[in-house]
Length: 233
Image (cartoon, rainbow, N blue to C red; front, side, top):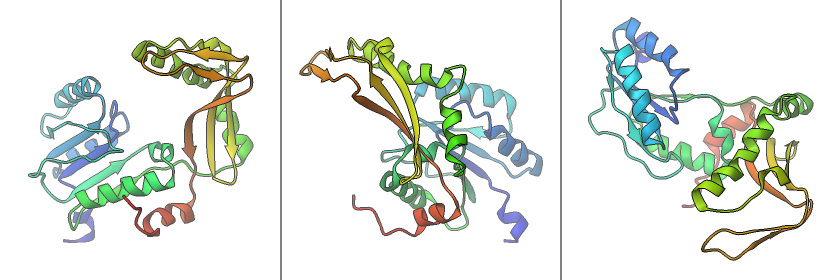
C-alpha cells in the first residue's frame, strides 16, 4: 500500500461523535476520494446518536452509517465486518476530560480494536499561558458558569436531589502541577442536601465539588500517553 493509499480509509470510527459537526470534514474527504464505505459514530446517548445517523444518511447516501451506542470510558465492541483500513478519530479535546490513567486505558481499548494498517487521529487541547486558559473557562458572559451549575440541576432531575444551584459559585482554575483546568462549584453557605436512598450530604461553607477536569497537552505529554507502562486493570 502506498503512502497516499494509506491515508484513504474505507471506514471512519469516531469516539464520542455527538452531532458529528467536525466529522463532516473527514466524510467529505472520504467521499471525494471514493474510498469511504462506512462511518461508525460512537456515543453514549442512543437518542442523540440516532438523530445524528439520520441526518448523515441523508447527506452521505454512499457511506453506510452504523451507529454504536457505547460508553467509550468502559468496554465496547465494534462490528466485526468493518472494511479496512479504518481511521479511528477522537476529535476535539474530549480526551482531556480523563485523568492520565483513564486516558491511557481508553487508548489501549482503541489499540485493541485496531488492525494493522489502521490509523488514529487524536485531538487534544494544547497547553498555553495559564491566564489565557483560565479566561476561557471564566467567560464574561458566564456561559461556562451556567453550564457548570446545570450539573446540579441534572442531578436534581435524575436523582430527585434538592441541590440549590444558585447557592454555589463557579470556580475554574489552572492546576499547573497537573497541567489541567479544574472546574468546581463552591458552596456559599453550610447546607444539607438530600438524595433519596442516600445519607444526607453535609456541605460546609466554602467547600467545593469538583465537577470537571480538562487536561492540556504538549508533544511530550501526548507521547507519554503512548509510552507509559500498561495501566493495571
